[in-house]
Length: 416
Length: 167
Image: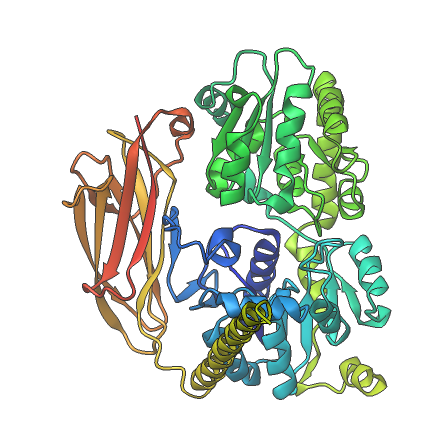
């Protein structure tokens, strides 16, 4: 089957939607499907969502991508895009269509129109943005089924806009990565029979760090003897609530005080927040890490904290469990479902409660490791690509002798 | 009467600003639609070129760091490319290293190399990545590095990355 994926960014860009799209695409390619990905030629958050009008020069980061690539059998085209002009952004904002005011790419829109005709299904990832709307229009023009994995962040302004809800309601299939997301999507008007559950997954073998890495990491980060290491992994954007974690750090009572390592691509917002952070001597600001360095940091840490108040899943919890590291997440429905009884939760947006939850985990490391072990069992049972891949394929139309089978997609369309 | 003159000029200025903004939006919209149609109808031939340039952010001076380069040929014919990779310390005009990589790519094939440099004027092209060095994470900043890769001297499709030198 020819499958066309449309996503704002593709790895090595970091993010949940990017990782999920790449995992699904790789699994499909390894199972004999011809997989094509259309993405924007962007790696960092600031390239897509940063302030484009101030004229501040932007320094390049440690990763740059070209227009054409093949990664693990997946053909990737990264399309040129231009920052939205001030006038267009202002008009879209007035029309309640802010969600379309970033990542505008004539190349991506044109290519998706052209390439949708060659595909058996068009699959868009991440609901806000012009890319998803362009993919829907292309799928409709080519009479192909349109599948959307929104990675929906309930309460997030970008996700709660009218244009996003409209797209959710008009997709042939919507893939939810958690049961919580299924309920959220139904509450926004998506028909239950159009929602397909396909969880998130990792490749645990790719995350196995060497045993010597733990001491090397702690020495490199100047973690004092006996002090715990707490880490955060991910994009350092305002949506991830890192300001909350920085406020909680001085309130943690554990002795010796923990060292906090924050690893991931930075943003202008984070650099501002970090300058004003209390107890900077306990913070280690690290850049985006390679896969092996990431697993070394996780394995060297006594706790992973994910303070984000908007998450569709939180794949970093799986990555921490894969190396036996305990996890602590905000008590929001999606994270509550993913962590379950294999980690600890704190009241979202409550720095005091976050600090006491960190203390609680650090006070009983044996219990915390036991919870992490439970998480490892959950990965093996639910979160491998061999579990998730077939679930994703269930959202696609069936083929009979190279043509679309008269399946439930047709019935769903006729019913609507 | 005297107060209505500035009010009228304010109103006219606001109207003029709105018309200008709408004109710009209309122009952008028109240009965007035209450009989309061009990409849809005649996207142009894919050309072999750089697919990726990446490195670890921190590069310790005097210890080898690796700079990964991948090229890809999306065409149905074999192609030969020369990739020029140059690295600079801080804002120095003269590159700290310069390496050329001649590569023959089969149809729809990719190739990958690493440039290894200690930022002491040395550089070599290798086939294996370096193992990650956590030791660089806690080191003291000692300036910035920049690396640029381009195919056959082409300016348009050059890839540029940057990071921090540490001591």
